[in-house]
Image: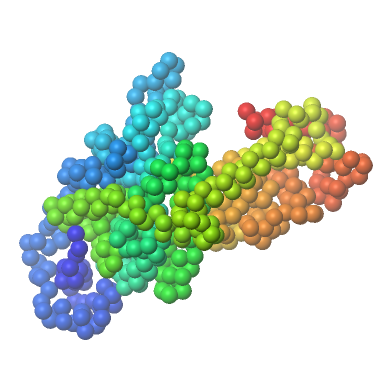
Length: 550
């Protein structure tokens, strides 16, 4: 529902009955003449029966009772389904497990299974930006046990779609307001003109990505805004390639989209300086990225997610009690258009995200094929290189010193990068369901505290070009040995970083070199005082390496 200017003034005057035209203009972002004209036209009586204090309260349960049709429409594209989620943590439909397992589960299908999601839904209904075949949902049940930190899945595999499972995947941006600004929205105090100008530029960029604004969709997410290219824009890629190749290209598409979006953010901030640090995309796209579905309630504000016109975006807060049947119908129409056929956008998307391949290709299919071939070759080279290195099983019983550099590398690669991130981070995000975990880097300020993430093998800094590396690179960036996550360790800096890991308690053998000399002999380490201590250190390093392989 779009809130009229008159209604916005009415709400403001209800709380500020003595406000002047100039105060109204400043608070709501109107031109002074417009505010004066609206006031002279006569704002509704703030003591009337329909004033804000007299509006009948609408509970989340009441609200969700009437919006199921929106999710039925949004949740399916030609036999493929969108995973759903309740309140961020509720990913999985569960049932009794086989044998000794506590249970088994798989991702909810938003449209087909909203009634099940609805049973425990408290506030927020989420959709994902992807669609997978019905058969995937039927075949993806995974056993689990309940452990101290939640469900522990069989083979450590969470039952959510992988890149290779996708059949449609929407290019997406979550453009966030800072917490202090979003809290001002219910009172009409957010900088609406700035937000609308910036949002218009973001949506125009998405129009360029898709080749036309007809493929672009947007939602007012209450705490920000969402921008999309319709998911069927990428469906031809999924149809043209097999599972292995889909996994390769859709993962690469995610990386390229984040890089493209970072450039768009810089352009928008240059054009609308007041948006910088206030209204920006979070650059955290991934294959199962959640967004608040249309008509969802916000987690902390009593506002509802509503469609935005991409070609003429307005940014008007919609309280839950203001939603009527017309708003539900508008959201359903949005979902129907969003899930319709936009496959003719694929050429523009490929040209924008892979220009280095598209320029010399005979159409989008050839460009994508060439990119897949290059990525597959790179992965095979990495696999062969890894096969030539020493594995944890090859480590000797006593590895306090070694003349084989691969022994050193094996011990470093055995380190879980998440552990290093916890050691160095100013703030570590432990929210359940956050995968991969996010952290606040010690080398720069981060308003969100989530602009870096880490998994077992690598960390990534989204602000530094989505670059990063393993445990050695992370500790080098945190300690200032390198000054950018794009940098690579060379020469003595490599051994300085090794020593920083040792200072954090990680046991790494000392490299003596084939000649008995010590390339590690910057003397950046402490020798163990006695033989027993040396032996314990060597055993700890060996066990750490074996744990990584296990």
